[in-house]
Image 1 (cartoon, rainbow, N blue to C red):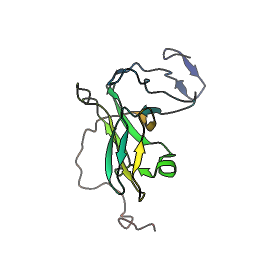
Image 2: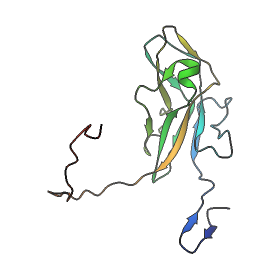
Image 3: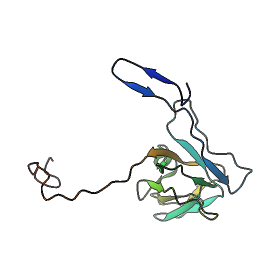
Image 4: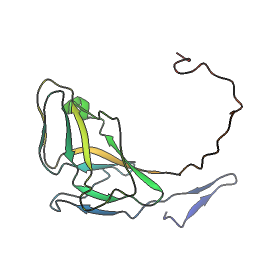
Length: 161
């Protein structure tokens, strides 16, 4: 089904957008474009442009080889691959990366920030899949300042255990 087709049920309208055109530039065109590795994958994998060594306990930046022009109305989240802590002892020290719509200049390559949690240097090899990217729909808030939200206080931070 393409973006112009829809399935209609008595109660809901479902629109499935199978593809979104996204402008992308590879820094090294000999490496592949990002790929979705299964038909049900929500995120695509980023490939390492150059071999990078991250020393024990240190935070390193691994080049992701692409500049992506995020479509209007979206953000691009850079997320860790689930196997990275187990296979490489690498974690995202900030949990998630955020690529805004206006980060796509000629030097705006996506870098993946990782921290080595092991006691040994970790090498991330050129061509290795390091992280995954996920496009998410965004809206900008229009703030409406109020003096009361009409709810009882739940007890504050940590109150539910």
